[in-house]
Length: 256
Image 1 (cartoon, rainbow, N blue to C red):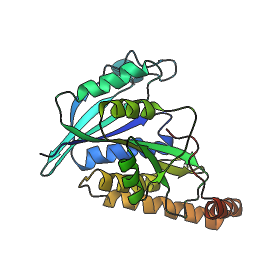
Image 2: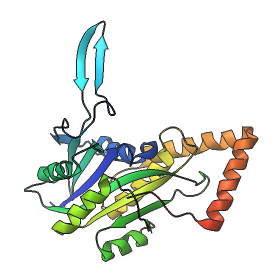
Image 3: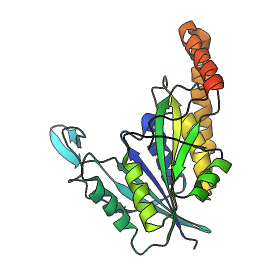
Image 4: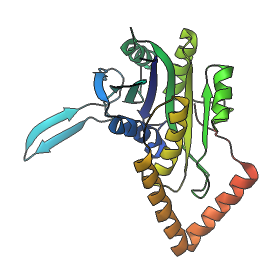
């Protein structure tokens, strides 16, 4: 087996339009990944903010689920991959990060890729923008070769930054790549997820068929094009964003 690749995604602030977790879930479903671990989440969340989910049927409590953080593994010929899907914690970030890395103990981890999604002033009529950062200059150059734009940023961070900092300290190559979703897309942004996962596939050498996700992407774009054709205000908004995109090529301003 090759060294393990690790892909991570977190619900919450770094998951606009579910770009990150939808991409990670697609990997789990398409590659028939098997659940191999789960974090005890009770100390990481304010349940008044991230409320547990209950299932009640005819007055009977059937299930109670706090925020879930799960680890999956894909093992096939020439590929060994871990996929972690969790919820960005509200507190105890250092302990949360250490708990994740503890799940990797005894495993030959080769490269880590964190997925993110953000809302940006970009139109759906252009190729979705993917930007990112990494722990080494060589890895930044590799991101650029794969069409991922390096970001400049100073400000509040997501859990990504803490995990990347831990990776840098441990000498683990790691990157955080973010798909930019149009501000007017209200549902899951399959188009940006498809673009993000296309980058992940090449950067992490993952043999995954993106056909279904591409079809979902095309369907979303068709719906938005139909809306443009029937709504002058929306059409003008998209035209304005196209002009901004072509003239300014906005860079990410709140990832990390």
